Image 1 (cartoon, rainbow, N blue to C red):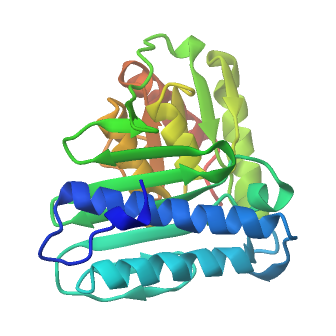
Image 2: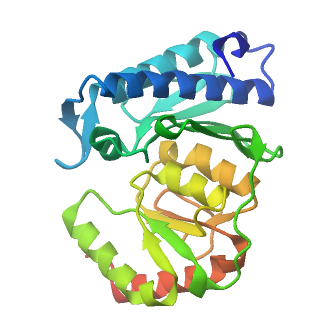
Length: 277
């Protein structure tokens, strides 16, 4: 995909056009951030804690994406992780995470991405998650299936939770991170193993293409999950909160459908034993 295919007006925008726009902007912003990192990365601020870092590339990438969305879709709403945004009237709302996995980005690990998703009153419309260091573009549109670099993907067909490779993430707040790690000890012996990539959108997309069997995490934001969760569902995965109810940023469980209920039971039991203070 290239910049020439970006939609240029609201009137001509259909779901495939929205997806092309999201993919183009994700690639453009990701390539910019990757190129800049090669010249050196400097932290310009923190958010919730000292370990929740922001670089100038987070802000530059978000500015690029918002400018591209405003130019192509001036009447849409936009919510960006770094505070950028716009209130529109079209009924379409974009959620942008310019660099999901800033710590990985800073350390030169490949598990960071740019995530751009759009939703309307019926739910998620399109999602694009681009991993610049791997040159991998995950994409989906509602009802149209999911792809990785334009090839269709499907989630794992695993049905035995004992063989499940499960990813998770931990809070930036030390006290919460301690509780979360204790919960994992309650069931790690009942699954294959645990992985931590450091970016929610990456973990969810890895569930979508079968590299992982499941992912769970707490206290996320819509920009972390909107695009990737659509990609996973379009790839056949099941999503919800830990108890199996509707997915919400406070509790996210995305997995192969054959192990979702078993993992839900393990998570709920662990939370009862180790509740947050």
